[in-house]
Image (cartoon, rainbow over all chains, first blue to last red; front, side, top):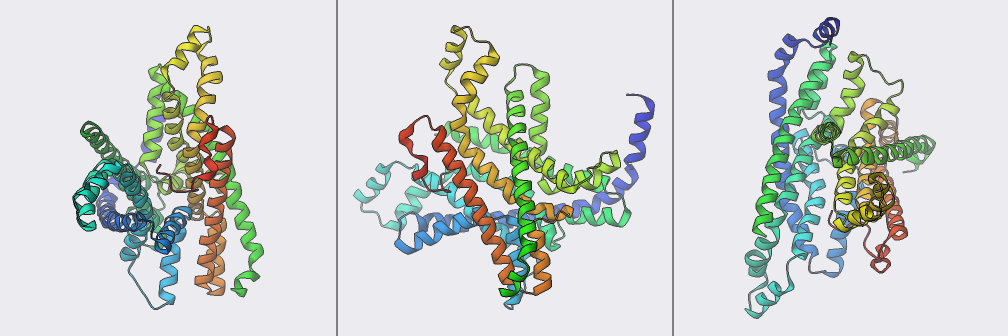
Length: 228
Length: 229
């Protein structure tokens, strides 16, 4: 490293500018986190419904849900966002950017969580079902007291990975002007003609949360590996 | 719908760009996956450390952030791609390559220890063991995950719209503005992407069949999407 290179770096990165825009980016980042949490809550519930309905192979219904999962997993999230955002108003339904965002994220990820749940449910030994039948437990009780507690807990680390992915995917809501951190970073960059600082800070914010969460998930994985 | 059909030549152009971006993106993904995956398996720390940072970086930030960073921030550091499509393909390849490198690493690391020992006993060099024994055996293990990564890459190509590449989605959105046929245009986009995904999944399945070590498993008989990843 020679002196001229350090000087050049100093000219490129403006600390004062970075400090000025930081609070605004942090606000936007908070919205990103809220989008993720609400979106994930929808995905977890909706996915569970899909998985449970799909399991008993009810003729038409199960096929329908199979196609739901296949189609959602086979199409790009961004196009889904655009589709919902543009199509709904044509039918008289207007939703805010936030609601549209969490709805599409939730529906999109429900297809993935449904697959995770399914794998967990199918991994449950047959004997558990048979024991429930032998004990004459009603269907509902079998699901809530025996099947779900045992088959869902081991899937928690995998679901955690989807949480991190959804967190990164909230950036796509930039497309519909939801003021999450990417949108705000681009706006700041456009107003000031300096993109390096806002985009880098936004990137670092993602990186920090993703990295911390991935460490948390590794711990969860170890926890459930020991329990199993 | 007929209004949309008038613009079909535009859609074909966009579709071609999407296919080109996916094709070269997947090629780059495979190269990155093997290079980085091998580095992560290396015994030397100065090969392992940068590959770890690479993977954490590309998996830790959103593709959109990476695209914007490369196209809008990198020029301030003196690096500029002449064509945004090329920049996009590079970002897609590096990003999905980071995910796929974990597939390569996992598949090779999961080979039974005895295979390496047999290679040593036969006097094969580490490079020969890798090329002749470990990699060929790992390919059937890697294929399903590589198929998923390929579909993921295809599904990430609409993001190139944000860096002003006129791929399929961009053309679709332009036609929507022109015709106001929102529902028809958006549904057409979804269906075409769905068909492309299914084609990729089917290609993966054919390759799986071709490279299956165990013929009896019949990968073609399993559902295209559905096995838990």
